[in-house]
Length: 366
Image 1 (tube, one colour):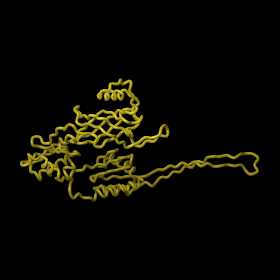
Image 2 (cartoon, one colour):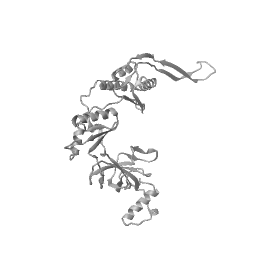
Image 3 (cartoon, rainbow, N blue to C red):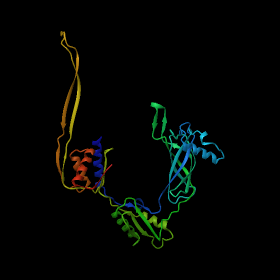
Image 4 (cartoon, rainbow, N blue to C red):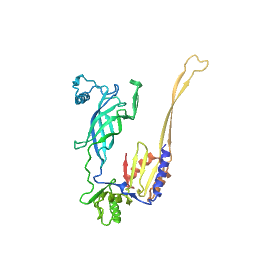
């Protein structure tokens, strides 16, 4: 498995090193406009119709049912209620910028108590609030669970998480969130991957089309002045800016995930001259049962079973390879594959190179 992954890694790195970008990336894909952001909503509600799989009578669920009935004019003491068909849940959603009243949002429902599953349940009308405590949407509808649970005791079967569900378009927006994207005739572009070089290139690209309009403020933001003639149509101006192509700067970085044996590297990795030794030591211990029997005419003795232990030691031939300065990731991949290393070996080699100061890249271990 690791050998195959190593070969795939080599060709992946080779492809990245030989590929040249004919064009850059759109500003739209690299940045977001300050102010045009999503907001999180949250609410507390109850799901009914769970056929005995709901909460096992926790106080907050019973009280919630009593409060709900009271809204409809039914006054029942909480102590007289049972909540086995009801589950207390939390509802979360994200509301994009510029959405209008009546727009539908997807919502996620998760069990708050000890309900076994939310399958077959119905979420009752629940207000969804923002961080300011105001209600921006209302959620309701039949929940869709992406898992199930069946059986009981040791014979139960469960797939995914039956206590988490979704409702597509289950919330209606009731209040618009005020959004301001143009301030003092300026818009601000925020880089999704902060970088000083990328910010400078972005400002230069915008100034090429709109002279003296953009200024890189820091590694994240680029302030762009709305030029004359576009003051009354900022959306059209933003559309023109988003279509500009920029070549972002990619730092030298290696991402290593030891759990999956995955290695991802950028094309700017450099390795200073160094020597690498790669070897492997394997010790095998095997137990074999042997039967010992007395002779055919022997008057004494009995059949005995003994265990024989065989120990073997195998050490692959290690090679001490001097690796010259490698200007491209292609040469790095060729050098490491030349000594037959696997992705797991590459992880150890990269760490040792980083400690020795030979690896001129950021090493991130997951």
